[in-house]
Amino acid sequence: MSSVPAPAPAVDPGLPDLHRAVTGWYDVAARDLPWRDPDCSPWGVMVSEFMLQQTPVVRVLPVWRAWLQRWPHPADLAAASTGDAVRAWGRLGYPRRALRLHAAAVEITERHGGRVPAGHDELLALPGVGAYTAAAIAVFAFGDRQVVVDTNIRRVQARVVSGRALPSRSLTAAETRLAERLMPEDDALAVRWNQAVMELGAVVCTARSPRCEQCPVRHACAWVAAGRPEPAEAPRGQSWHGTDRQVRGAVLAVLRAGRDPVPEPHLTGPVDVATGTGLAPEPLRALDALHGLDAPQEQRRRALDGLIQDGLAVRGPAGISLPG
DNA sequence: TAGCCGTGGTT
DNA sequence: TAACCAAGGCT
Picture (cartoon, rainbow, N blue to C red):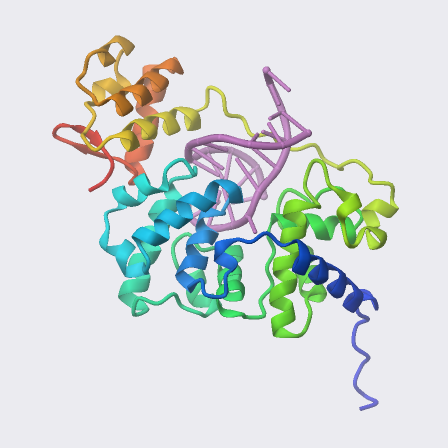
């Protein structure tokens, strides 16, 4: 025994206190979300994780309910068309996530007997499942003791432990190691801990106006102790107006609004082509919005080509539509 | 790795 | 009001 080197010192001798404070707060303050229901299926958890990638909870809720109602099991979605998945995705944004979720459902159906796999590596191999989502499903659907590092947890760690206003732009190995050291050893407690820190970051330790007065660990927070210094680096800024992304979204909105193929010139041609086309009211409204952007034909064509390239749209004899 | 991929609420 | 931000993944 004496030859065994002493273990590295714990991050903080008060770690159990931290665990108690945060999970205790969570027990009282947690939002009642359907995918946190103990009866929620792994598939329900998985769908929620896909939808929550870069999309706020309040916008996910109604779409998630309708999705699970329509496709209660992976095989149900796998049997549907990708176009139906994209349409059901609605306006959640990043519609390629709908394609990836569909592809994942196909793979689960064909290679996992229709059941969401429980293993982290098998999850990670699914389309649209990265390090975060694999860990999240393993933890929240199967009770695994896995390290979850999302934007909320990164921010809480940056403030409470590192004393910085915001984490760096990209995830570092040090952050993952820190998350591992902070995680409780007990499996069940680790699940709650992950959920609780995430929730704390989502509703209290927010990016712009943190509600420190509501924070269960404000007295142990390094950032508060340092006087809440400003962020080290300026935010990147997400450009939108006039971008290809904006046009791409507007083109897809036209396709999503109706079932009938849209003649290609209506999307990419001169603006006046769009008038009196016999389109249903909804697609016509979306088409007006597209043309209201006043984007060059070249840009609209580029957007459409990109959508087709990505499998979000198909070119048929009668025009452009969502896939099959 | 940095840039790209939607959409709408908040500040 | 323009900018920022949101339970990321992929190339």
